[in-house]
Length: 163
Ligand SMILES: CC(C)(COP(=O)(O)OP(=O)(O)OC[C@H]1O[C@@H](n2cnc3c(N)ncnc32)[C@H](O)[C@@H]1OP(=O)(O)O)[C@@H](O)C(=O)NCCC(=O)NCCS
Image (cartoon, rainbow, N blue to C red):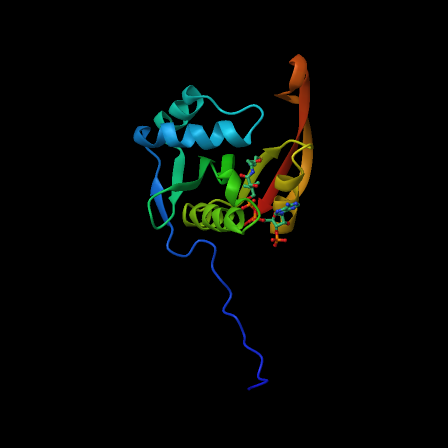
């Protein structure tokens, strides 16, 4: 029997997946994911506003056509503002978020953006870790930015990535 170690090929978590512009027809599926992963999800109205504003709104579907994630990016002068980035809950921690961020960055660069800005809840440890790991830096705090449980508010950590 050979003792030569087998080198496993690294698997691209986005292999076979397809990005497409988000449209109204996607919103019922988007809403199912949104409602399942956020304590305070965006409403259909929020998504419609983003679609009608002409932001960069993108879905990611696997090879079988199932929605696995999405992002919404507003372009303002030379800064992209990442309004929403979401991976389906059962697929968290598999590198898909990183793949979405790669595509956000690629898109922003192609539109001559110089940086990407986002807000994140201090309580959202996974997202915070993902952004830090990706190279985002904290640049500020917006006080009482988000709705929270029992009518309370939660601060937002503001982060930026220089492109
Ligand atoms: C935040 C989110 C987009 C990240 O996507 P993901 O596919 O789960 O993340 P990835 O598997 O690509 O991991 C990216 C990094 O996140 C961090 N991370 C992933 N899983 C983690 C976990 N269980 N605990 C802590 N950090 C974790 C790691 O630093 C990881 O980098 P590494 O694999 O190089 O170490 C996704 O978890 C999500 O949709 N969450 C719910 C919605 C949300 O909170 N969106 C962001 C709002 S600001």
